[in-house]
Image (cartoon, rainbow, N blue to C red; front, side, top):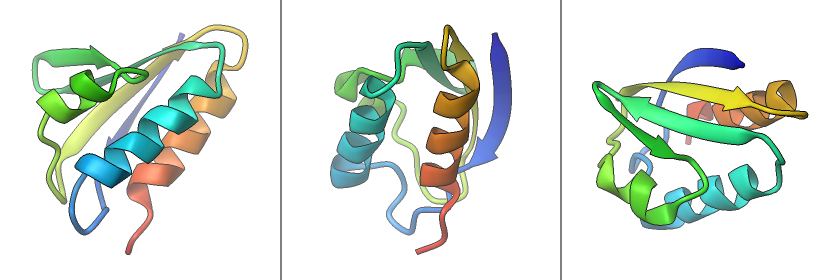
Length: 85
């Protein structure tokens, strides 16, 4: 299991379209992936879970992954949310 802290740098946060792209990327990987904000942890492959976190620009999150491609999954997802628009 790997874990990494990241900050949402997307201008509009991780809402609607960006959340859908995030979930699409998460579903490309076999690993179990979770996204955590404060005490709430959700499955990163669930659009409803991601939307329930209401992640605004600048929000710190923790990504964790467990499985065959956990390192690659984490790397891709962190890059996706930390990109500056």
